[in-house]
Length: 240
Length: 264
Image (cartoon, rainbow over all chains, first blue to last red; front, side, top):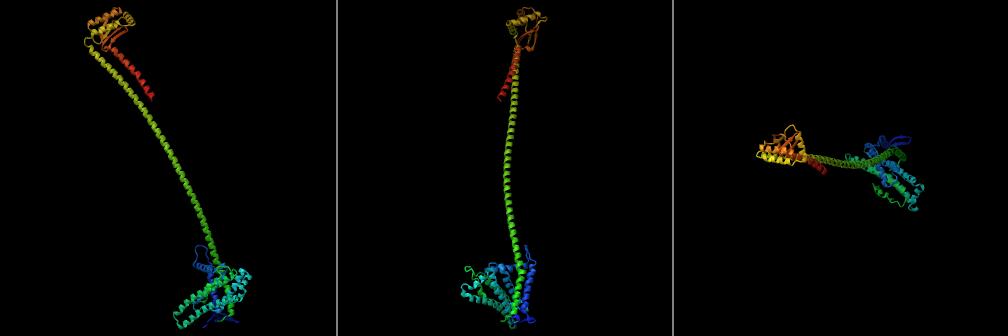
């Protein structure tokens, strides 16, 4: 049994292997983009709005509200990045109900890629907001002694992000695979349903943590900021 | 746990592409559409608000106009009522005046009629009294008054004024016809002789005297010589009385009418 879809190579050309992770990622991307395109080409600005449009509007406004709740000053700035994280992970996880589908988020390569994106996005957003100097100074807070710990924290949370998502999704797939061999009827379905829930929660956690990191890095220079510890209530969920 | 770094790189690229695609096809159109819709709703709300304001202003204006109209209507009604009252009073006054005038005229006419009636009544009563007196005299003369009549006539002749006596004498001289003595009843001979002698004596003539009866004389004697007449009779008295009564009534009536007119 293959644990990671990376090992499922569909095509190989001169040492470049096109594995299932990438193919399913493309599938998810295609689904998202086509759906969005199909709906947004017929956008209505009047009183009557199609259900699909309402659904998209609900999704977008909910993401924006969540970003706003975390405390970011300008939700529209972070919406593409955070929204895409959530939509991609959620879609990738929810599609597990299709037979033969291997979620790309079950590959450590994918989750690592997403975590690296977050790792890069945090300083990028912070620098565009506060300038390079301001960002670098945040590593010396509250005292220069904390610099190594800040660096370790930055790195470890990135790894945690990647591994958490990977572990959860992969474990769901593995559990279903094991259960099918042990108890082939009914029971795997329950686990699959549980997997859908877990997948959605993981998507939420990943996106919201990324937002928390970005927000805390963007606001770190202001010590008097009334909500500097937004990360703490969220981190309690990291054990999921 | 295995990480295929090539796959990681591909996935990073995939993710960045997905961000761009979703930004292109999802977030921007949706947020823009929502923003536009919000703007439109805002616009329509403000439009509705301004229209409502306009409508309220208009309503207020109309209310004010209606109130003014009501007030002016009341005023007009009040004016019309006052005018109608005035007209009514004036007409009533006119009618009252007219009625009063008519009543006055009627009263005058009534008064006149009454006066005429009273006058007529008085006249008729007077004449009636005189008639009765005449009748009484006539009845009394029927029995043995000849001598007294003759004596009375003789006395009258004796008392005649000089002027009348001369006229009578002149008439007796120039007369062709005999003197005519008229009485209501035929006188006896003694009376006739007495009268004839008195005539001859008074007028110093010997004129022939005829005796005739005339009921109109009533009581007394009428002597006619030529064109001169001397009458001593009740009829003459009654005639004079009647004339005097008429004259009195005729003078009294205009005076009384004049008096009532002056009182008004």
